[in-house]
Structure formats: structure tokens, C-alpha cells
Image (tube, rainbow over all chains, first blue to last red; front, side):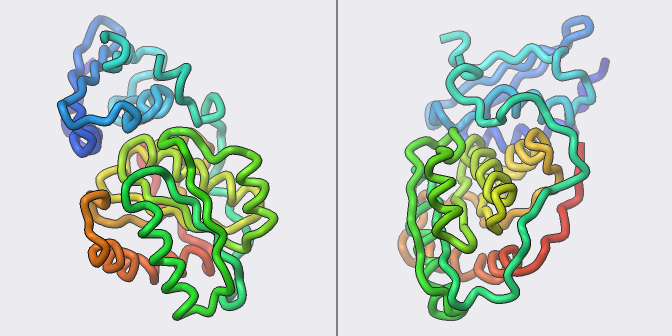
Length: 76
Length: 185
């Protein structure tokens, strides 16, 4: 599995507009995607996880159930 | 936590060949326009400005305003039902963040399914989330109008300018069957 940064660039721009950042890491057959919030991020502005998984599936071409998604609220 | 709090998707992705759209009126004169604003700053002034332009230049008869209380949730069913009864067309916006852009598209698709033509406004930074919601809702390529990001910091004149710029596309969406946007992903 190779992470296509070009495919992720649109999502990164969208997240940045709400002051969120994204880290993507391969882990065997899964991809771990961690979203972190900047100081100007609004808690409610991040899309629901089903939408984010759809975006990541479209960008990365990996099954949605192979995406481990970590939102800021998951680690706070 | 987020999945439990905010899931306006209505469940797993539905298969569909494309957007399901309501029949369009040929003209807007004499019609009642629903204005569905989210709680983001400048959403209501933007929609009000479009409503005023529609009345002045296209002869719409009246507006029915509603303000959602949630950025992320879809429009409540009871509110949707009321607007479907009272309105001939609806404007929805302004999607000026990731979740509210997605929710605006979900609302637009819901109105179309209920037989009311809808025009959704999102700021251009959030196409990715708006398009994803359209896919998840089974309406890939759902067409909406974009305005430059951001909208929230604009002053009153800036909001009116944006409304003026968006007006032709909004009228087009409400009166012509939109050509679905190119579907990616």
C-alpha cells in the first residue's frame, strides 16, 4: 500500500480551512489517519466519520473498513 | 464519540446512478422561496440578500425563513415537511465549514427527494466534504453553488456582493435541471 499525497492534498486543504491537520500512516493492511485540531478549529466543523471515511476511501483507494480514523475527541 | 453525536448520513452508502432531482419551474415569479440557514455567521444575511434579489429581479412572492440550530445535523423532519408544504423552491446555506457544507448538501438532497427544487451554497474550500456527502447520500455529482471561502468574516456589503455574484447560478439551479458535476473517487 502506498499513500498518494497528491490524492490527499484536496482533503488537507479542506481540513486546513477549518484549522485541522491530518497525519496518515500505513500499518500493515490498514491506514491510520489522525486528525488534530489547531487553536482556531471549531469542534463541530469536522465532518462525521462516515463522511471522512468516504473521502479517504476515494482518495486512497483502500476499503473504508481498513481506515483507522482518530478524531481529536477520541484522544482528549 | 463523533459517530454517535453527528451522523447525518442516514446510514451506509446507497447505490445510485446520480442525483434525484425535483421537477423545475420554468420561472420564479410568484413563487415562495424557503431560506434554510445554518448557524454559521453570515448564513442568514447571505440568504436574505439572495431572497431580496430574487424578489426584486425575478418576482418571487415571499420567503419563509428557518434557522437550523445545528451546524452538523440535517434539517429536522418536521421543519422539512413544513417547508415542503409552504415553499415552491428552497435555498440552503451557507456551507462555510466541513460539516455544515456536508449537512447543506444532505438537506438539498432531502428537499429534492421531497419534490422541492433546492439550491445549496457552499464556500469553495469545502467541495471535498460536500461532494462526499453527495456520494454517501447516493447522489454523486449533486450540483451546488460555491462562493469563495471564507464567508463568516465578511461585512454586510461583502455579503451582498457575494449574493449578487451567486444569484445567476442559483436561479439556474432552481429553474433548469442541473448537469451533474463530474464525479471523482
